Amino acid sequence: MNNLKKLGLTALAGSLVAVGAQAGEMGLNGSANFTYKTNSASEGKGLGADHSLTASGSGELDNGWTFSHYVALSDAMSLTSSATSLTMGSLGTVTLGAGWGGNAGAFDEEVPQAYEQASDVESTGSSNLVGGFLDNGGLTWAAPSFDLGGASASLVLGWSPNADDAGTVNGAVGTRSGQWGDGTDIGLTITTDAGLKFGIYATERENTTPIPSGTDGVNDEFNGVWYAKYNMGPVSVGVSMSYLDYGAGTASPEAATSAKVVRTAGGVFEERQLSIAFNVNDNISISYTSATDTYDAQDNAATAIADVDMDTEALQISYSMGGMSIKAYQIETTNPTWDSNATAISASEISIGLAF
Image (tube, rainbow, N blue to C red; front, side, top):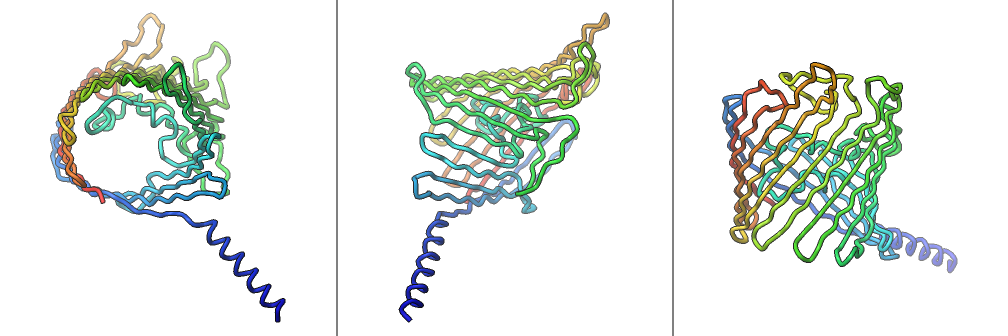
């Protein structure tokens, strides 16, 4: 009987340890947004609504390491993004996720905005796509912040064994796209006490079927971006420069008068964004952004294809009070989709958001 009691107590203790090892915190939050929008391209206007839910959890291991996880769901209760992170003290933080932006999300279009990023409003600019092929099935590592000449610096690295932006479920093996192999990236952020923040990021993915030397076609892809932001009390100014080379060279250049698709049109895309934001008070912010996104066909023929600039100007304002926010923008885009014959787009939006 005593042996049975000991066995029972041992089993109970083991079960309690197992439960304790899984202990952590879970939370659920979400938002409801309602918009009124007009768009000159469609000559339409309308009311819209969207909602989102995010479940998150965190915990701590016996050695002091911490972990966290989140899952974001759309209106249709489908997955929009998710990520799991393990913070290992002085060893840094590793993260694996799906659709969460990866390392690039902290560098692209990193200029002060009161509402949306400029490319999120009407047309997707090239800078928004920098490094996007690594945020599904990619692993990142963030080093602990370190001192760099009196400033605080942080370094991030990333790697994907299959850099075609296709995530896989647990235990699955991704199918090679037939074109893209491994992808890597690196980013550095420097923050000073004087209000200046600087970031630089670069990424590359391998083309598994490279072209012969001296022949037009697709080679390895390279993307890069750098930004600088400066805060002066309530005023913030910023500049961002990006470069996206799909590796197509002059294999498929497109005429200035045709619509372009990033990573389809041959040539390179370069975008510059300038922005200024003003915090009127703790509740009201205003920003103005000017963006020029240039398509360069890299065509050296006698009848070279002219560069096309897609220019965007956005004025934005936001007002918050507790769990409710009211935001609006007015935007103008000329040469949308890098088509010099395209009609300019004018759009405006007013949004009411509720967070819970």
